[in-house]
Length: 141
Length: 314
Image (cartoon, rainbow over all chains, first blue to last red; front, side, top):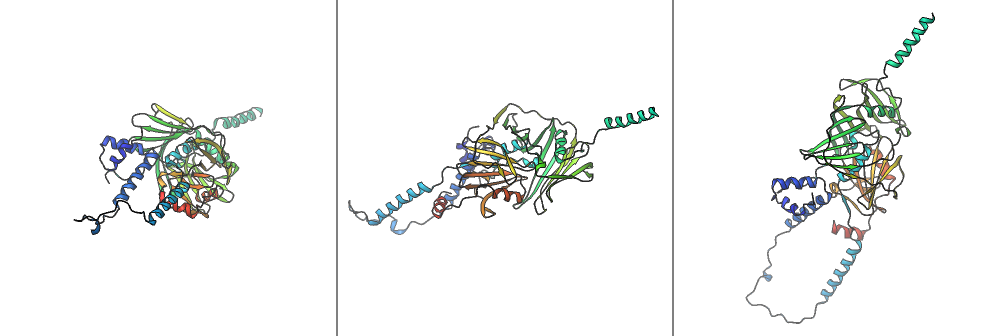
């Protein structure tokens, strides 16, 4: 099965059919990339939901008489400073931001490890890792 | 007189030839394990481990036939995992099988690091059984209990260096005799390619590197064993992220912090070092975990600027 990227969002919303849900769950159990994608999607949604709802300040509301703004103004000093700071931030972020990591699941590690351990005389079931189903939230939650 | 003597010699010789040695008659634990590997049986096993994160349990179905041990577990209603003889198979309800297979280069003799002492015959699951203590110097590191009739390994207890029990693997249902092993359907096999070179150490705290595999094209995976315990070390030039513990708090081991995951019988450590990302998976008792980590590249401590910048991206 290819990566069901288009189904992850619908899965979180509980808007998948039972068959699609089964496909997504089975795929997530084996695919670390999609599992991480699902977590990122859920984290982004949670972050959006946690944003406060603010009242619009009175002075930003439409007025009957609009102030006339000159067509040309000299940019304030702080605009230049802010631009310089932003450029510095981008440079720092580019330099120190982590490189793309190697994303795996415990199952990705345990498959070859358990296979190799099963050759040894001391092999036992304690050397096998259960492929853990990811602890992602139930659909619709 | 000569006739009687000849008859007596014949009887003695016949008794030596005709009376089979008991299945457990091994001199070393290696002999016991060799005999155990030839036993045929089926049953259910429980693995239970006392970890710093609480008790971790699992139940497995076991079958052994033709020298191959099949450990299976029903992941859900449609998936079964079967491990044995160098392969890890995921069997799906539609009959398709996905296989990860390896070819091991060798094994380590447990006798190099451990001694063994047979105990008196005891009863286990209503059967005669032989307990064998695996000693690391004066420390009892493990106790293996073998079935006296078939030689099968019925129970394994693993101890920490302070004498506390770390893990126990034991049959709760044991049926001697040839099991019916279900054949898998069409399979997709992913053999792990052997790697020839790595920067990983060949010896780590009494463990020897036995095999080296290529993992995900740009990383390597090394398999270490001391004959009793084993671990696999993943090394990547990139930072390694394990999904299940991506957001887990770090735990301090020795003077350094790692991300850690405990399962029934296995532990995973993940960290970034000066030589790249590392992930360890193994069945080591608690004190051996610290010993092994102490001989591997340590986690690096990013400077303040890097931590601030990285926190914005994590």
